[in-house]
Image 1 (tube, rainbow, N blue to C red):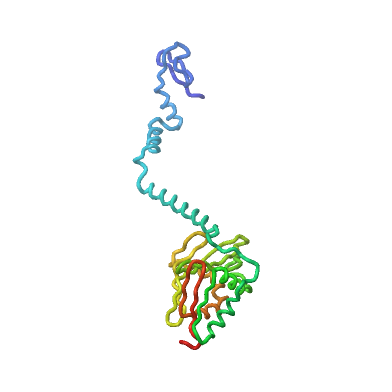
Image 2: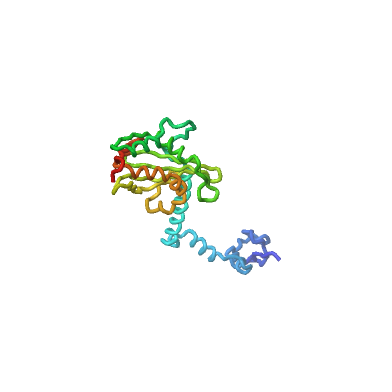
Length: 252
């Protein structure tokens, strides 16, 4: 049976939505309605007021709630931004060329390191990349499942050599690189790790050792080049070129 609003004047039972009694026309006491709803098991006016106050009262939103929400926003924003930067091709990556290099760098280095006197060799970035392509022609896939090694390249900036690798992750190109400052000490090449990159995302030097798997194939494929760098007595890296000064053959 539907609930009714009883008239206080004549006792007639009216529909809950009425304002005036259908029988005598007297104004109905609508304050009785919340009691009706409470008896039905519904939410009382007082309970509704408290619920709305809790939802809208700023005092109920603590600093802990704010800090947690802010941390979540910062974390997911940083994760999305990092993923975007990693997927981007870094600036200055040299274009891949199919033609043979103009200079036979390996032959020049071998001749210079076997000479009885010191020699100075100047190689451009394009020269170095041509030689690197020849050296890595037989390089196989990398050490990660789904990752295929495609090529290596170098970039020369004042005082810094960036050795980069282009690999394919299930067909999608990804770029990584390591930045070194090159020095000669105790008759050997002493590279200082300055950092690196994944795509356009810079990587701190402390993190780079954990990314060794991305470059392991490259390092193991260049033993001859590493040995030749140990035969230098000076290395000067400039913008888009490198200057090597060899030690005389037989010199310690």
